[in-house]
Length: 266
Image (cartoon, rainbow, N blue to C red; front, side, top):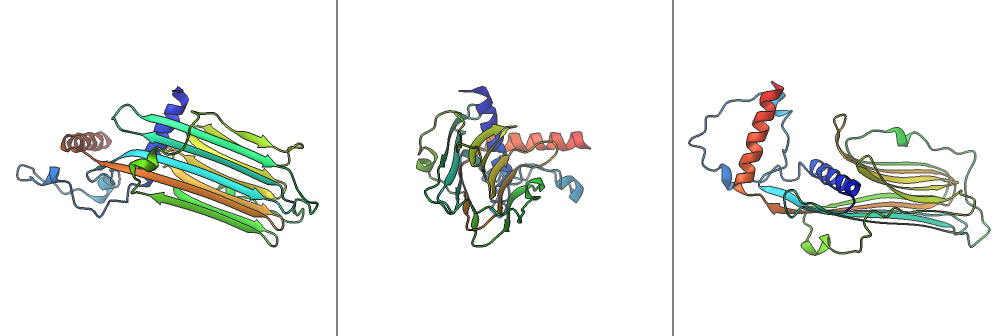
């Protein structure tokens, strides 16, 4: 397996865990914490609690992730652009993740004479500079008769079958364009993340998953910028998570690690 792909896969998996951290906050504590007779409890203020990590771990750990990105653009003259990327990450053993990646990109020529629909008097910009932690969806549309959608589905109850479906070509990146380069579709793996982009004379559509870093938390971003007429554009993202029960020993190890981290911060 390509080492860069493995690094990206692990980073995306940890980003996913961070984005999903609040999902199980209301569940009951694990049985590993039922016997507290030997523990001495000490009140902790909000400043210390704010630095806690792993808030979403309550007896479960994410053991598999499948993320699929798909962007499509149809111009009024019939020209189309499409790009997709699918990443499957298996965490069946603690230090042996399995990562597979598949991508595709296509651009088809016009089948009519109605033009690209671009409007030189319209502009849509600025959304690409927005920085958001978590999930963001931005649509900037200038023109008439346009249809643009950003859709994101996050499934926390993925079945084992959904984690293995599909074919993967292990990090073959995809790119396509028309003859003059005015319409392009691309899929990229960079900086520990994945992104897909469509660019046409009437604007662009992008989707990006960026892992967390020292500067910011992880992010999933969908962006549409349409400056034209009669455009049909769609961004779709599907994120499937599979969880498995954590052992009591692993829960204790995490608790000890967090206690040591908080001691260092003080």
